[in-house]
Length: 200
Image (cartoon, rainbow, N blue to C red; front, side, top):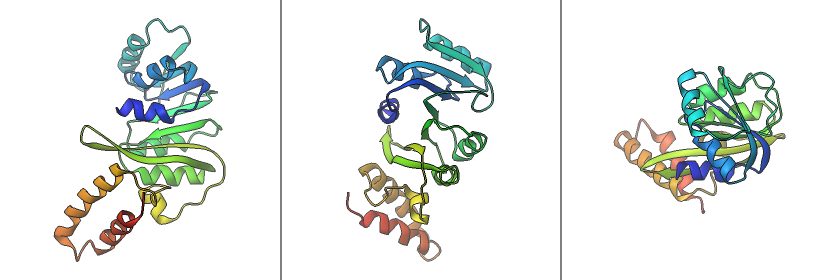
């Protein structure tokens, strides 16, 4: 489910690059579904890259690199960075000066990723929350372009005013926790109530 949701966001492209690939299941699915014709996968861990090689065994259109972040000289049409915390994705993106389409799925602190995209002159075209196995994930796609986000968009998603069912459920859980100390959390409760009041 999670892999399917992320791959759904990937545009059809020539070369895709998966950063922090681990088993490279996203790349595998992108190649098998025809979303990409070739791939470059990388990971800071040589052991993880060996897992990726096993997953992609038989694919002649894939290169493998052990490195920290986006490999130097990467000329991909689309870059995937998924399954890392928002701080890590922010740090990786801060060193990138290319123009590839970015597909990102931070495990936490998605607001940091949105802020970084805004500073990089990237415009978010897809940004939503989905659920898989009782866990909630954010996925976004961004292309080069000017974008200005307000505080609520940075925090809850560019299109928070059209919340998915998953975002509603995620925020209802948070709201239940915050309500135990309502006076202390009044501002956050007001924010979440605003999002939940938006129509789909």
